[in-house]
Image (cartoon, rainbow, N blue to C red):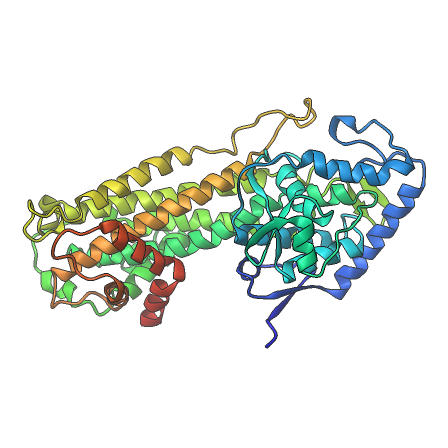
Amino acid sequence: MSRPRILIDGDTLTLEQILQVARNEVTVELAPEAAARVRAARALVDRVAAGDTPSYGINTGFGTLAEVRIDKKDLRDLQRNLILSHACGVGTPMPLPEARALLLLRCNVLAKGYSGIRSETLALALDMLNRDVVPVVPERGSVGASGDLAPLAHLALVFIGEGEAFHQGQRLPARKALELAGLQPVILEAKEGLALVNGTQAMCAVGTLLQLRAESLAELADVAGAMTLEGLLGSHKPFIPEIHDIRAHPGQKACAANLRRILVHSELVETHVNCSKVQDPYSLRCMPQVHGAAREGLSFARRILEVEVNSATDNPLVFTETERIVSGGNFHGQPISLAMDVVAMALTQLSSISERRVEQLVNPSLSGLPAFLAKNSGLNSGFMIAQVTSAALVAESRVLSHPASVDSIPSSAGREDHVSMGMTAALKGRQVGEFARSCLAIELLVAAQALDFRLPGKPGKGALAAYEVIRSKVPHMDRDRELHKDIEAVSQLVDSGELLAAVRSATA
């Protein structure tokens, strides 16, 4: 049975398609119109390489060595040396999904027809994707100046049979991985090495998968908050449309509407209609305002990523219409760096307000429930340290939310005198995403315990759906047990999408 396919043309790739490729769910092919553009750009590069006029990166050195002329007989060595010398990455390899996304994004940029790559080199890249040859790319080493030079150089190593690659999950020397996949390395011609290493694709690969995860976590934060609200017998009134229509931020309105869907048909809300409480704490009452602000930040980041993944980020750029090869600065990662900082901050505020809701649940003076939601508290500590773990993750997330995009460290003998630190922003954003997932998993787990104490009353139908999914994997805690296992079980429900799917189905 053949797999679904996507056509890349350099202009229409979506974030969701990137995720499909990252998960190795589809086959990737080059659109015919893109193939024609690639051939035309290569023809122009070949004409320039055959002449004597200096052209950056084709017959000159790189960076501050741009004024050094290279003999025609050495042009192949120039491109190979570029890849070898720039492969200076260190640290843990990018996870396979991110590395696959990186390879796809580089193919998509090459497909735009402004890079000057040969058709056969691009064909090898696509074959690598489709035959599961994934370069080993160390995470660290990019300052996001001429894009992600070191990560992309490690990607390009495999094209020439150097470096390492994963094939069907096994880490191998690149030449062996290519051989097992029935592929041959290429010999890079004029400009091809440079066409493979200039660009923002590493930060975009990490950033795209982070963005999609963050969007799911933002939706999940509404679910967790709604379960907590029901467990604390909070008011639904702060979510009525009239309040949000007169402060019409789209994210705030979307969150309030989602909370109303999740909370509809609540039995618990009817149990405290005439209670003496006047107002809920901000962590409950202000969910639309806080969660909504996070949604606004994520909306900004999505717009930046959707533009960037379909942008030409090479240097120099090959313009066939005017027959010009021109140096510019499209490789600078500042837009992505700023966007990834915003994603990290958005996720941190979701974690922060979640941790405050967990405190509301476990603190008996605030909840009216048993201390730390434990039966026979004292003998049992209940969820005491679950809240501490959440607090620890929030504290570290706040440190990681210090923006990388305002930093810069000059490189390349002063030629790259302002850099974006985009990969740094993406990597720390990814870590904040991990922490946010865990914080929300803790809240979901603790809120489920609180709802147990409210039985037989049932929460709103969306909150009930989430509660039932959690209880299908994690039983009520009657006595202390290893809570890390419960947190991991709920985290897996989050990662698999099962929990959100159940809520969406119940609230459709």
